[in-house]
Image (cartoon, rainbow, N blue to C red):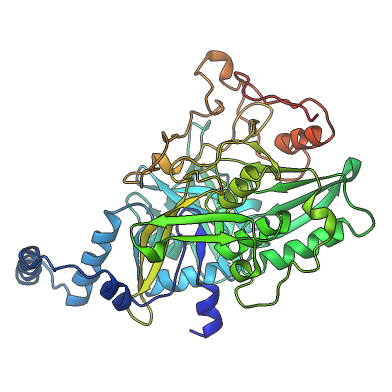
Length: 469
């Protein structure tokens, strides 16, 4: 791996699978935090190891047993600590580059099955109608029950132009839905933008990658090429995260220099850090891509759109802009992935991902298992909520918030805090839509807010319905 790749992998905060990564040696970490080895327990482990080797019905290699033991130790800690074998380590490095082969699906797990967190825009999955919240119960003829996410990714990826069939359970459908797809090269378009009516700019960040900050600057300059917009909408819905440096750079684009973006705190000194709107933290030795940012970007009225699929890096940006009163956060409560993982290489091709600390917003709020609450709640669609994604607080063995009461996902059709009443339930299943296009109800309400019009929060008990002063 080149030094550039190591630098780019330095800090990642992906929503559900990869957290924040710090390339350090496992031996160095162990030496810093050395403690007496539990010899009696290690003898017990040795006895179990020997018993399996001697008595298991089939031959098992020492390597397989050791890998399984390492994986088991990490899996039982929390949902984000994991052992990364050769394939998983390679997959993690590939996903930060923004181009790979497959279907274009961000996945998690629920009830032992693979769950779609979000289809990636303009990919085979999105074009075939795969929706956030779909449970993938079969890949071709193989059941996914009990399948690890790594195994599921292996099965869904493959040579481009090859067919694959997914069988999914979808809310509101009595029978499983069979979807046929053709694998393709997936090029994740991190940033896209356009001008909306009434001189309102729209920028969507789908994932935080190496070039997200640079691409954001280019899009903002194009939006204000003729005249500075009257308002700006930053869309972070269903953005599962990505590189932490990208999140800091996006935040820094709208904040004054050296403002606090996010901090981390854990048990050991190395896990405590404050990240500022400073090129040291977002450019990381590369040229400062924000130096030519138009002046209007720092002051333009802003709305940030978030939902249950906004996780990790997205939550960092939303929390920073909210705490500094730089933007109005609108939509639904975010996922709540606020823990930090370090990547500790075990060998040249394998590593462990270990949770070491929590993220905190500039005002000191823990994001973990809580998420970011919007200033104005608005349902996903005019009929109700569409994305019924289990949040961090719903995951087994999740790390606690450490500060506040945790918020689990609310039933479909209810906004956060709404009481389950008959008038909360959508009369018909909300139809899927594409973010930023016609039929995007939350975007319509963001435009209303920036235009000084009333905001429609959607069906259910009123939360924070507001109009711009």
